[in-house]
Length: 120
Image 1 (cartoon, helix red, strand yellow):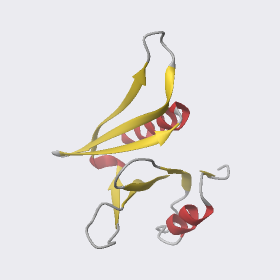
Image 2: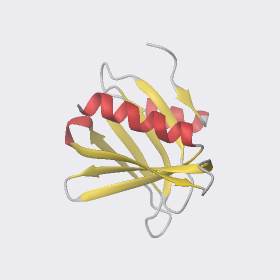
Image 3: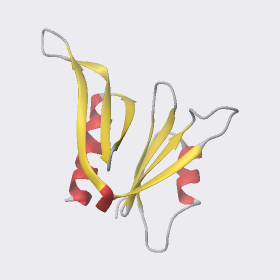
Image 4: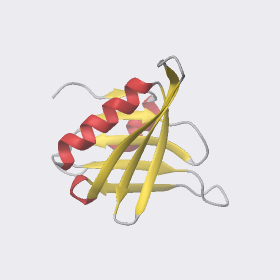
């Protein structure tokens, strides 16, 4: 497997510290917007860091690919058909939907494709 893609070495190291035996990191992308710190993609699961809790608390949520019921790319398109500089991924797990916004539509598309590959 190739080296993981990542935006921040600290975020990559945080994911590395919690890997299961035989699990490999595919990518770790920094998120923008309120609440979410980053999303990690491994060969077994999606890992989302959520900073939206009261009192400086942070949650790391692991979502096994088998539990993902749908994944969507939500992007802003201008009237001329050009994509803006951010994109959002929506991951549905049961009745809950996690949304993560990224800088750049390429990251959004990559996350979508990886989740779709492992979830199907």
